[in-house]
Length: 286
Image (cartoon, rainbow, N blue to C red; front, side, top):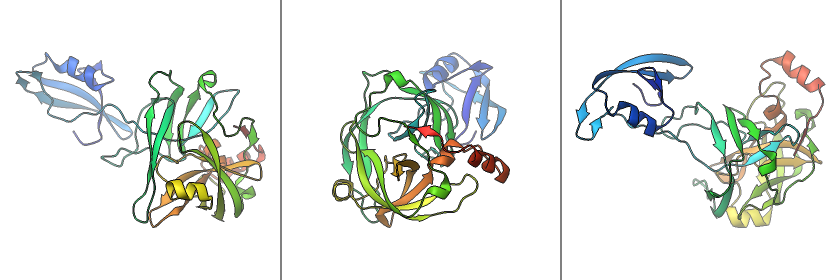
């Protein structure tokens, strides 16, 4: 077995959590058959499972959850389809993409550790355990996480309340813009930024633009862009143009963004499919 392997079943018995895995192997002796997923491939591995006073042990460290705080970028109020983060979620230990599905819950931001040169800051948050889940995460891609949102469970606390068009990449330009993010509690607030550079991208690609934080309040509270702001929507000329994705470690006032259009059309793989997407015109999102 290797770091990052996902255990799917034990002796053909499906397991979905570390607790289930412990229950299944507790009374087993000798060799057991593990079905694992490694990257895009599945394989069977035979493991000798020695017995101890506490029951049988695999001898491997198993983690069954990846948890974090991020920012919802947009959702379609008619279908509930949503996009968040603007970049892929990777395993903290292996650096590999997280494989699987998940759930989304409301969070409260309890504080912000300001960023410094060489030391990225971060939002500090906690889940609202009394609230029901907001949605289901179905896909983890280079352009963010995607899934279905329970629109009835959402309670907007600021930000945009009406649908706005999504800009084509060719409509995004250097100049003033606004990002929406949360610094305290669940209150969504606008902050002034400036788009410094845009990339001419005809097919989906990350690092579409570079932006600089100019808002005095955001600079004072966070030093600029911090971890946890990934996915914060960028609005320019009344259109959703992108999402904040990364901060420059050497300059926390600046960072990268991805075009929101690529988040809507991240499955376009070549020039032909991208051109067809352009022909459809802007979509609506909130």
